Amino acid sequence: MVTAIVHIKADVDKIPEVAEAIAEIEGVSEVYSITGEFDLLAMVRVGRYDEVAEVVPGRVNKVPGVRHTETHIAFRTYSRHDLEAAFSIGLADAD
Image (cartoon, rainbow, N blue to C red; front, side):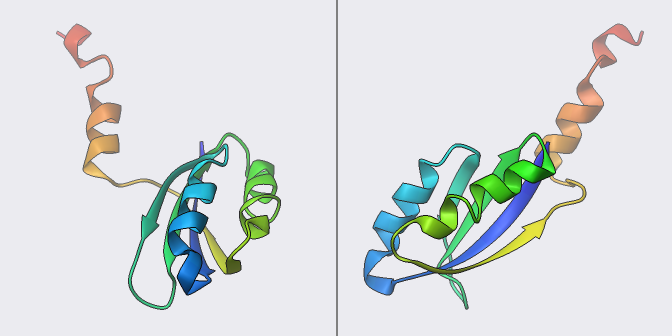
């Protein structure tokens, strides 16, 4: 699984519509309205690196109201949820 974090600048008067349109794109798991330099943050989760190119410049950047994106690829996940799921696999049978 490849995870990309996409920061998005959008037309201010279209942020809700842009967020909803991006959330409907296959490969986008979540879209957040955020503070700071960017207006939205989208989490893209796909099977291969080349799919990031299909989703971000191929679809996200083409949503009306998107002015700019900045994409970061995640190398590892350290969230408690993911770590607990990874370490709990097969533990019931370890005894």
